[in-house]
Amino acid sequence: MQFNATTINDNKFKIGLAVAILGAALATALISASGSALGGGTTFVVDDDGLATPGDCESLTPTLYTDIQPAVTAASAGDTIKVCSGPYTGFSVDRKLYLKGAKAGVPYWTRTFGNPSESTVTGLVTIDAADVKLDGFSLTNPNQGLGVLVKATGNGAVIKKNIVNGVGGPAFANHTVGVYLELGPDNVTVKSNKISNIQSANPAGAPGTAQGILVGDSSSGDPSLNTNVQSNNISDIQSSTRGAYGIQVNNGASTVPTATGYSEVKIRGNKISDVSGAWARGVGLEGETPNAVVRYNKISNLNSPPFDVPGDIPDAGPVPTEAAVFFEDNPFFFTSNVNRNSLAVGTDAFGIVIAKALTDVYVSLSVDGECNWWGASNGPGAVASGSGSLVGPNVDYKPWLKSDNLKKWCCDKKFNDGDHHHGAWDWGDWDHWDDD
Image (cartoon, rainbow, N blue to C red; front, side, top):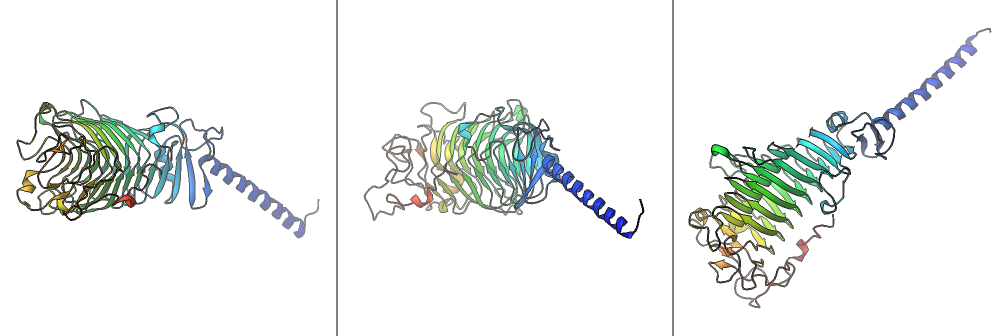
């Protein structure tokens, strides 16, 4: 064949076209193996068997990622990590990502922890960046202290529709927390999760409180702003010789000068039960919480052996041992709203109580504790004359609900007696807790 300039240029064009086609094919194959580019970011897929595409976890197409951390490391801010069902290890997120488990968007009450259809993570999950979303996982960390850790940089984190089960253990001699907001992250939402079996032991005086959810810390100088704890089911929180909490808020509670933190918090629509320790609290507001909202929660079965004796009123000291809602180290207690909760925790436990150190100082101030169910139609006992759960001093508890229907009309038909509420005063805050 005779070659000339035209022939050479034609061949160059054909070769270039072939290379371009091959490159496109390779790029498509790579995307299929690791993720797909969709509007708003790339979706990476993780499957423990190494076979999946972003659209099909049962695909026979190889994926580059068989565990979550490598996919997180490869992703860019704004991407999605889709995790197929299977077992995985703990991971840390340092950029804005959506971690989408196999049960993302699926309510916890339709699921079983660790089921083969779940994305089950064993190990600590750390959120160390803003606007991270964790949705639809089973999470466990046995014989370790934390399930999910949201660090101070985790502003805007959303922890949603996960099952956290098995943190610490009966022989774990340290603090244990299901979901921990550390040192003041802002705008964090912890919503529609099931958190259970959080256990701590305390041999020979070792530290070991146990909390389902903790908004901390006592030494923090950074406030936690706009924290939303909503529609979670928290149960089986146990500490052998120290305190146990469904939800504890203690940001900035320490007396050291640098502990200037405080918390803006709404705690709504949660179910808290089976909390056991040397002291047991459903909700502990144990640091400054200006304008805190505690509404529509159902709290039951608080136990603090050996003090839990039938007929005993555990208020001999400045701190009661069993309380559904408890205020301590919180001079803003009187700005809080604790309404339309079920506080039926028994006749030897407090529904609402304020630590004696506060009531001794702020004698004329009270917390709004109206329109709650105390377990009896004639209201609370202790400073009141009813047969329901106890109520402590400095709590405005009248009127109260006459049944456990938290939507029920709440009115004593006295409209000039200083009550805050007379009936359907706050339905705009109901917000369809379990719709999302």
